[in-house]
Image (cartoon, rainbow over all chains, first blue to last red; front, side, top):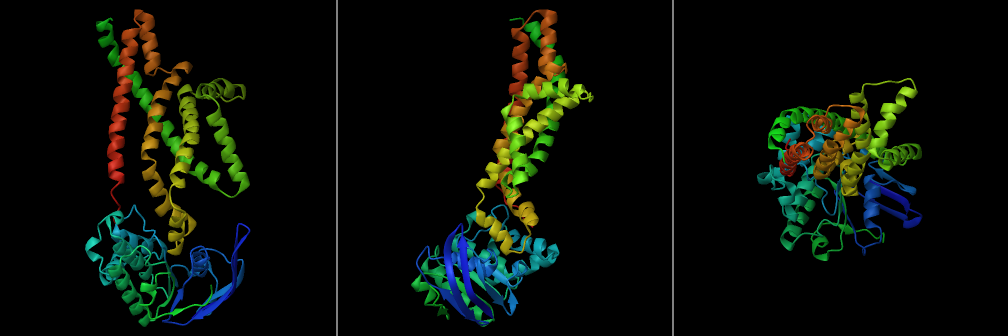
Length: 205
Length: 218
């Protein structure tokens, strides 16, 4: 369960978020729908532990805010994917597992190939990430996050750079992941995309 | 133009040039080793670290290298520290290069999106791991052209070693000129050797740039 209680954020003296609260259960998809500049990305980064909150608290399955939960319990997908351009596709997924979780090379490759295969990007494993299409980049980023077996998956405007076909593909993947028990929190103002999700719009903005 | 003297001077000039390469190579190693911590200190939110890096850069970038060599060579003995001239020249040029290389690294770091730090953090990497595996490898790839430029500058700056009596290419040329009274042929030879060396460096830089475009695999 993800529980956000009275969360506020002040960045460089400017109030970005004020008293945000919501609760999401295992396997649920929570959608943040609001105009640009309302603080959706800040809220997602706060929940992911990438930014510290000014006030309030976040609990994930009963555990309070902690930097250590990153990568283990929470997977985060950036709007522009933020793949590592100096690594090929396989290394983008495997290297973080080797670095952060200290997995052996063989284990990391095995785990990476499982997810790259599942997300249909296994044919591009030795390709430079800059040569991938938007949809492929996103699936690589998703594989990278899912390889850590997160309990919570956070996605910032995941359909923003996708065509309709890839957008539908992503919605199906996310619905499947939610069925498997992953809690998903995402921001989107793409109605065609979020209406295909089996999720609920969170009334926070 | 005296061609026989030109050809006769080439072996001696090449021998001197080997010393220039030696000086430039070790000075670059010192420079790049200092540059990473200096750049990170300048980016640090810790004011004393930032101030130390800024002071260092102001001193080494704000004074001519010639003066810095004079300080090392003539100044240190006044403090009771007399060092071999070649050592002084390598260290001073290296310290100077550290200041310039740190600015190259800072420029490289500034073009890496901040979200790359967050992406590394979101994958459970510590700050040290993020810099080691994500940020600095990208930064080094971006700084290849500027770094090669610095290496070429060092190669040219190494001729300042002649003022403390080191028999590098310019000093050798000056000695031959004193003996033969031929100026143009000697310094034409020196210039040709320099151009050949810098062209070779540019060639390898282009190769390194091409290599850096290839992504690393697991």
